[in-house]
Image (tube, rainbow, N blue to C red; front, side, top):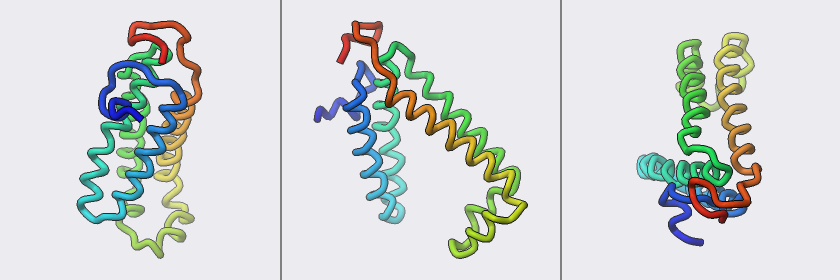
Length: 144
């Protein structure tokens, strides 16, 4: 695997390298999240490779990498709305209290925002990861 796959947003990548890069970043994220404080910093560092592989996939079928701001914006908006509607209780509760809290009627609205954010991000991931790229060269470079 070429290090440029995860480091530079220039160019295009096919579906296979995208999913490989995605898997690598997810595994590294899971491993680093187990380490207090250092894991959170590493998680922030791992955002860059995640952005890079998504941008390259968008480039592969002729779209600008700026389109990645769409699911990010929806997620940020939904997170804000979730917090404004009582979702902070989900973040501040003890783990053993979460099942009862999630089932409470007061959490229906915050959870809807969480579900919308997840759905938008998931559909975007599937679209980016499963869409066939341009067979010919496009403005972002030759076909991978």
